[in-house]
Image 1 (cartoon, helix red, strand yellow):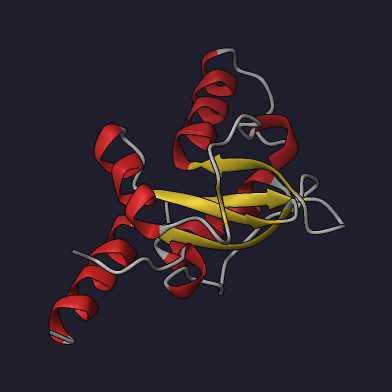
Image 2 (image 1 turned 180 degrees about the horizontal axis):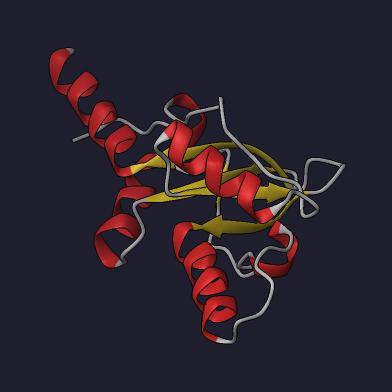
Length: 135
């Protein structure tokens, strides 16, 4: 059995984030340059207010192209504001159950309402591997 470990022990802390006023095409460039499919959106206090994904960007581009309107806008106009998150001190075994039950590949990690990291299914697998290697 995997010993109880916390999300904070395995989360990634070096994140790319956006502000709501970030230009949408600037965000798209970041996605392509860093080979990522989404990023958290934070306010000036570091509190997470949403998530921008490739799908959010595509919806915007297709909508404007279809209606022959000017393309663009800001991240805050197109981000998803309902985001599933986990807490910094959550148990990683419970997190593994969330991954098994749902479609998420990663969760933003919050501590006292502020974004402090992200944890993915690969991070949970790394925790299991480390546990097995210690046996």
